Image (cartoon, rainbow, N blue to C red; front, side, top):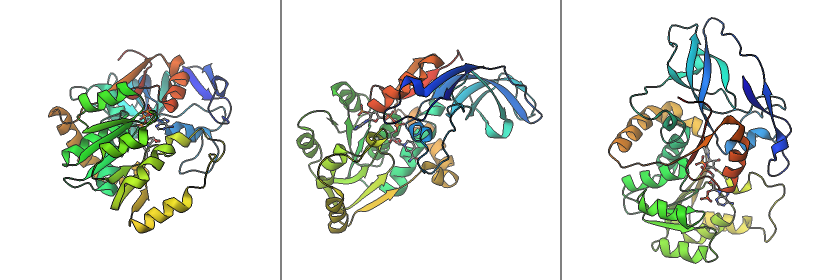
Length: 337
Ligand code: NDP
């Protein structure tokens, strides 16, 4: 087994030395367990939080432990009747080429229904995050305007497309003209705005002529500052992620924006509600799987993946994702399917 462990807790942006590659013997499964070889590893922004020991909603990875992550694997050996050798399964076995897992902790995938990697993105946790956060907290109705940043990623692209399915106007915010063109031309967003452009705030105002009713918060920072004046009365703000802040080591320079933010919450009667997708799984995941599979089959939801070849490239791809160098859902192809 080749595996990548947390070598040191990063200060600010992680560096190569925060990761270490190790080789260990492949473990044997005990009764009730399966032995797996990893095919795809998902890379997700939340992993930055797990590398840190700051208090959060989930326990940190310990220094020396394997980096966590969702995986699609093939079963090599099974000591449980529910899983057969050769099956492909969704699991949570982390940044390694092989793993032993409890059979109860993996879900057998139907390989005839969707590409394997989709269960890590559009049909998996990130797609569900967009679905649940938008429909449960954002609650867009026909004719409203929904804005979302990191819009070409798996969460944001689900949010914008589901907003359109519900009759709303979707405004995507993304880094660079290529991603913006993709949002408009491939995903059907009504407008797309480049947050790196010098006139970003003006362009965003033009893209939302009737104001913004739902701002699905993925990034924080200057994007949020540009959105705030455009929010309508009774706008909803599902707070899903703050990726612009994940590597921050200090509060940003400049004026304290908190009083202005709270004034807007008060005077515009805003609903600001943070969430972690897991809280909606019991209630909504079955509907999500049905709806999303239907929308993909009907061509109403499209998705893009950024496939990185080889486990050894996972650290650099992860750092690149936090900087916006990815274009679509980042999955590492650890081995051929
Ligand atoms: P993405 O694949 O969209 O990757 C992150 C993207 O964030 C980058 O590609 C980049 O896109 C954008 N970004 C990075 N820095 C900045 C910045 N300074 N300003 C604006 N945009 C920036 O990731 P996901 O779709 O997987 O995740 C999106 C968000 O959802 C994250 O915040 C993540 O933490 C959150 N999340 C929350 C969950 C929950 O349960 N609450 C579950 C899953 C994800 P660009 O080039 O377009 O700027």
